[in-house]
Image 1: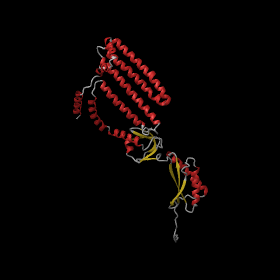
Image 2: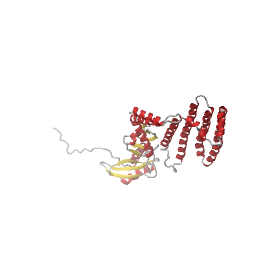
Image 3: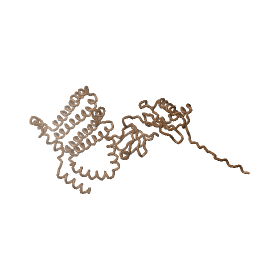
Image 4: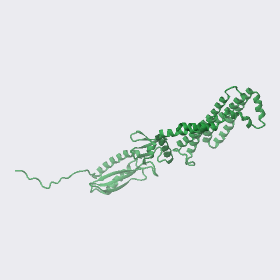
Length: 386
């Protein structure tokens, strides 16, 4: 199957030949206006002088564009929006200077009429131009997304959680377009390469299906946002902790034991997630069960428990702590102290402190905490033996 695809790609490449980049430059004179053609013909009569003149002219033009025109535009834009002027124009100034300079080198190489190596040099200079645009595309995509992320109220799609995904997509598109242009410059038909890449892609897809599943799950997690960095989540598989990183392949949690847990995104995408930091209110409710002996003053128990809840400094004031009687137990009246905390990982420590405070307060007030005990009734004592 792969041999057949390669043969078909080769036939396509033969049917649609790509014109060499150097031949395209050779037709430069046909693009010039009639008023400029005599100058080009003069350069053709004196190759060395003409090549040097072309390099000097394009260098001066690139210098003026970079250090005069674009610098003035950058200052003008920075006065309106400083971040846009500093982040956006820096890569643009550099790539335009490189493009104009190496375009002059390309024309100078063609005008020099070298006995050999002209086509190779032209392709090298053209590749440098494409490489500079790829680098500028990387820098511009990152800078633009950072600026849009700071104003995500106006651009809701660009948020801190979606910036990595959008940045990766922009960089992949830049690489694909740049690679296509490089193939064209070197006279390589990209159609055949794409046909072969399709077969290779299928084989790679089967071999790396788990990795691809994690990548796609990472995309959906970033878009759907069931949780974000800093949230405290619980999974139905038992993992529990605060999210420290959301990557394209995995999500990392820090557990209460300060252990980092790395979970593949495909596992999380198919799991039931309880986000304790989500919802309209990030506070977490805790329930402290308390049992007192039958015969105790229920109103007094409620007052004692409520004072303990109001006195604890780490229980939030809104919603305020409240007391509920839940039922009549086998040997106790069952109450619950309901209170809210702001950090889910503090649940265990705060409940420990509340239990200690409740035990001391009930002992001070003389309220009995029942415990399991057994009363034995002897119906009849055995008669003493003679």
